[in-house]
Length: 289
Image 1: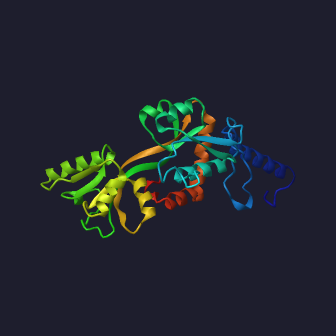
Image 2: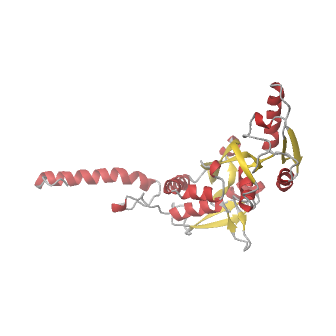
Image 3: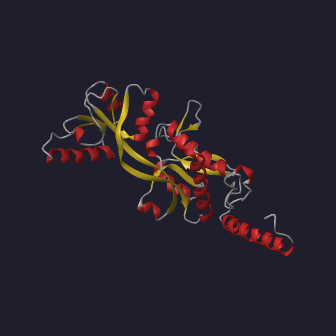
């Protein structure tokens, strides 16, 4: 209260402060948020679990087989960027993260059958999926061009510098489709087409480049990052990612409070810098939201 106010004026000022505080707090309570005083630290208000979660934990369905997003370490414990992001979100809600290994082909039915509270498994946000689940967008999935560290083909990215080059990739992927489109652009400009060499696995495609049989290797940014963690001196990314698709944490349509809480918790994780640290740690900062 201003020092020069007293008596009736002072009482009026205190009432105004109460009304203003309520105007801020009540909307947050409606979302199931536990509003605590930020105090002198200026920290963002903490959260409490949404009322839909009563067990002290949040269960994530995840196909834990896609490094570096989610996979099992030597002790058969889940690790990866999704695991750390999901855990950080859970901590913001004062919950324990529990991971339910779920085959990707049945992951949405598993959510609808309440085998978990949310899906965190790099699920693409598609129009057809948005009709059955709600999403909290949290990262992109993209393709990238990698080249040997010396870059003998002088490739600058997914552009016409690939015209006339031999490029290895995995059959049936987005990269294969994009390379075919780029090759058509090359020929329409009077340049040599892209010579795509197809393999059934990323290991084979990568080795083809590292042994000099191709001058570039295209794959998902996440897969490229995973192999670079093992030996970052042999090859590198060039240019910007392409074929970017937004991915999200999926929640049942009938869980609006959980959706609101997860959106807010993820926003806190991003604001704190934790999200960037996780994405950078796993080499996939180019796929940050």
